[in-house]
Length: 496
Ligand SMILES: [Mg+2]
Image (cartoon, rainbow, N blue to C red; front, top):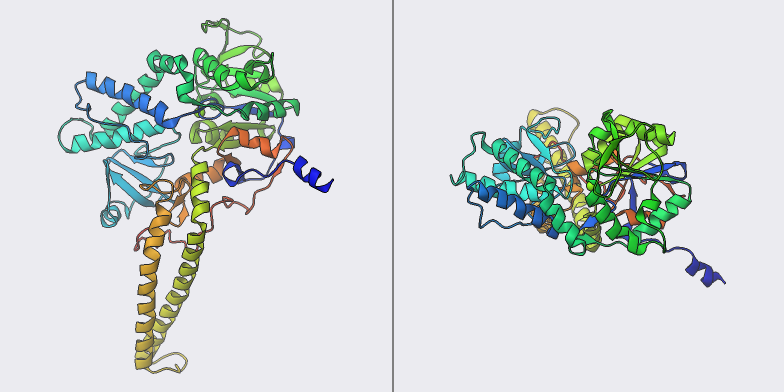
């Protein structure tokens, strides 16, 4: 009987599928859950989707006479959470204090000395328009194209009256029109299996929530025709017979224009036919309708709920999570698919990490000894303080010995620290780490996302009734505490 019980209870998910918690969240107290669609309820094959977006943008640039024919999309060149420096033509990774820990100029990595020369007196402040944060996986084509065009600009092959800022603006304009134009979307709707990664567990997770009494909402910036095609493809094959994806939701809003949706009083329209024809709606949101535009106040009034009773789940750090939290105090969940790769890589690396931590502890101990020896020598030299049991010569000899041990320790530490910094992505390292500190993205997650996880279906494992506890106060639960914070010490390479 005992073993039968054991089998009956749901097993804990694999570490890569865990829900991480930065602020305690009682799911029983949540009465409505809003979902974003792209890269939240519908996950795309990033290399495929972004490559097509990139190629469409490249076509636009070629038509404008730019010499970009030989450029190829490289999905590893940038990552979510990096920051574009539009003044210097760089992409940088910053730690939680905004100190730059890695940088690329064009497709070339800046070496440590150059990086220090450029950024030692600069802190990344996202409120300054100079810096552009790569908020979502949709940013990968943008960041990649920017770095490649910086190379062409430096070689004098393209001109930009506004320099690197002008280049960035041009890329954004081209990619925005690529996302807006029907051709790319039509290509995806015609062959969704090529672009969408199915997740058969996701519909069950949403059905559990719905039958637990939570009002479900879909609030997407995508337009109706595209939303319908993607949701049909991702949900309908996995729902019970006779159920459609639209049956899951109490509220469906397309073309929502987040983050303005959370801040504005934009008018609401009803989508009246499959082609997306709109009409003004006098009575506001109604169950079973498909709506266009509108705003979060209308949602709160319709549900008669507000603030902490609503959980919003999305993948866009700013547009889904930061603004809904700061403007409305909704509870928030961030979807970070790359976590799966990061958690797996960090798990595999953990024996080396243990060694790295113990070497760092030894280094800290020896550094402490060296500072004490230095102070004893100073007191001897200036003849003050309590008597020292060692002669000046003995102190000198001991100092040399400690220095030699530190040097040999650094030789052991350097390759391990380098390995740690190349996990998941050889250019940029793990998403939530920068050197041996938290990354700027980790700081954003901590301040705005109550929970974060790699995919919506991970909520299946914790059920709609879970009490999710923050493990270490405000610490990100899976990031190891920094053994030796060095936010103001840039005298050493990253990680050592
Ligand atoms: Mg999205």
